Length: 387
Image (cartoon, rainbow, N blue to C red; front, side, top):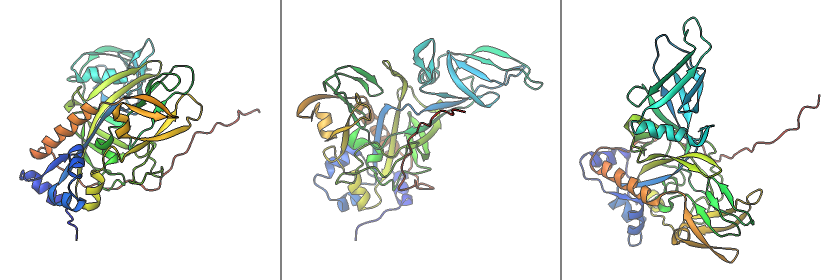
């Protein structure tokens, strides 16, 4: 009978410094000569990681009260609009929000500036009330002067993502980067065999309460992410072949590093934020050992034509092909380029491995697993009322 481990058993080995921790790339190499049953015996935790643009991100900030106080009903940070409907001096700044006078600068850059210790200009307006009489404030804030600075991202770490190409005669600008006409390039995002949710495709160990590496610090999975979709088609290895599951995450930005949280601007598209996430996967049994052993040749994704309405599927390719630098689409050799950083993902997986080996980090069993058999609704346009 195959060995079965528990979270408590693995954590005890981590605390005593006896646990064996490998990155997902390392365990994929080990799987060339070892069976899943042997891997369970030899490996306790596998670290996974990704570093890419995750637009559905942002920060909750508490500014603290002024004297006299103000109920902030319109808020700008370096000219970037922040959501003001939380409380008097609470705000949520979305990574993709932008300064209308400088569209290349947005919420992601504000978050990065604060992380780097820079001063940020705060302007806020209110109508004035008996308890909050001030109507306007203009001041500078930084990471030391604000109270809470919490990263809260509704949708991160897609389980897989499509390859983007453009078959039209016109260059187009997208969140997948600039796509040249006539299939002259292809862009892709996921870190392949290192990607967290691809190493646990059935989400047996990743759920609400999972402790993760987030932006250079400890964070947690707090819910399934938005657009969470578990009924997408899978290949013969049980891996979704298009964007599927996602996670919602939270962590203390005051503990994070701008090396793993970075603002970005995509030409003629807008602002996004690169987020570094690492997830430890406990090797509890042979099934999980088999899952974490997956390699780039076994992970496939769909190629979509972003230049055509409806984004039709043109084919299916492996991450081994994508990372080789070229794929074949419609009989044409097409150059590939990542819009996520594989080298940064490797760095994160390695750092998380060190945390685990040094007893600085432990694995957590989900307090609740994610829903199964979920699907997505599309927004449908209704006819205007003619009355």
